[in-house]
Image 1 (tube, helix red, strand yellow):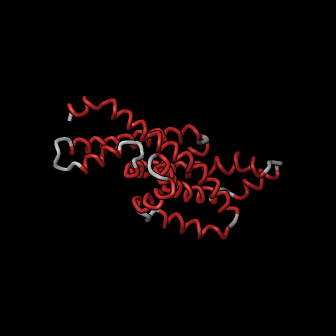
Image 2: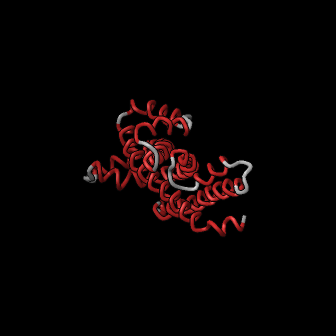
Image 3: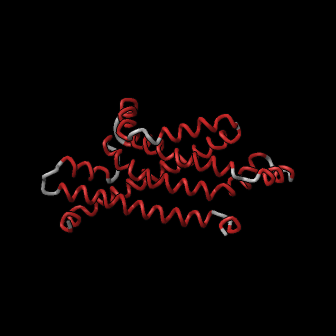
Amino acid sequence: MWTFLADRWADVLYRSFQHVSLVVQSVALATLIAIALAVLVTAIGGLRPAANAVTAVGLTIPSFALLGLVIPLVGIGIMPSVIAVTFYAILPILRNAVVGLDGVNPTLVESARGMGLSPTATFLRVRLPLAWPVIVAGLRVSTQMSMGVAAIAAYALGPGLGGYIFTGLSQIGGANALNYALVGTVGVVVLALLLDGLLVLLGRLTTSRGIRD
């Protein structure tokens, strides 16, 4: 194992960077989409059942099936990987964003409007900060899930450590098959734990002390 890593440490680091970059960018995009959808859902009450159904059903769609639908449309490479990771990343964030925004005390919203704040200012200065801790919880779940989806996206020749996992599986019985699979799997787990720690720190830094305490 150590010889395997010594010979490929630069490639492992590069693939790790690719993996994290894919997840971070996809989750960031998913966060923007999910919050926008949550605002729409909370504004139109009739959309809540549909949003709950979509988030529940969406998580049951196998990653390989989604890639099978996307690849004929956009080809192989980075694009299907981004689409797949972003799709799955949206679901937990959307659910938590709806719960968080619904949990904001209506009295506080009315007070903000009574002080002359516009709907946009009310959202940015009152509703979003109060819902943020719940959204961050969904963001953490989404990121952990996205790390695994990003590995599966290697099936579409996407970037990241998933390529090592698939190489190991395709070479079962070979000299380095176990090394490839083990390095890819352990690498994904380690990166997931590091990202989760960073999100915990981000949550504390971006949450008002009064809400956090």
